[in-house]
Image 1 (cartoon, rainbow, N blue to C red):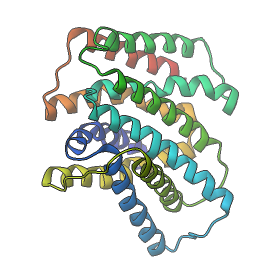
Image 2 (cartoon, rainbow, N blue to C red):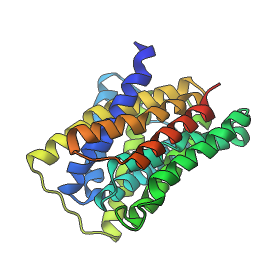
Image 3 (cartoon, helix red, strand yellow):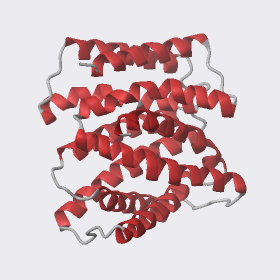
Length: 282
């Protein structure tokens, strides 16, 4: 079953880009995320109690988990949700943040002592060429600049959080760690609401179904699998599976959201995916 975790993760993580659109169409992004991670934190709290996990941990471990939650659930998801709410196509948003393996491999050398060779640098070049092909002809026209900026913030956040999570050496149980990370995400989005935006959520059927998908399948499912993979594998090996996400997200978006990709976009997807694969393979 564990061998299937990467494939399950790819499918669940990719589907999140699709259900993000109906959520931001019926709510303000940060309000939706605050609501989501409040439910997720409560869910992991109940599960931790039920499975008799030690919830009271050291202040250091709590702070580390909260910071991971701010990076993953706050800056990363906040950037993705905000960009899509501004009209960023879900497939292109997925492509940008899936350049994460390239950045992770750049940083894995100095921060995690993982060797980076010429194949990684070749992959870096191909990955960015692919991103430029997809973005360069549309930026400022059909693609909102604010969405591009927010998505790149999300890219750096998920890269930093992956490196940070791998460097942590504590042995907190997975549900307790996820609970504190969800609290970190909730606190981040709550602060955004209090100081910068007017909260709004339309609790209709569309929002409820999409949010249920993200809570149950993504936060409880995909994210838990990701934390498991980061803990038990090297950072570069873990993030290598992300190269499959752009194509999977684009297919799901085409299937459910009727989004179209032109020839240049498709070429960009292929080149970037090949680049990420080369940069992260052994």
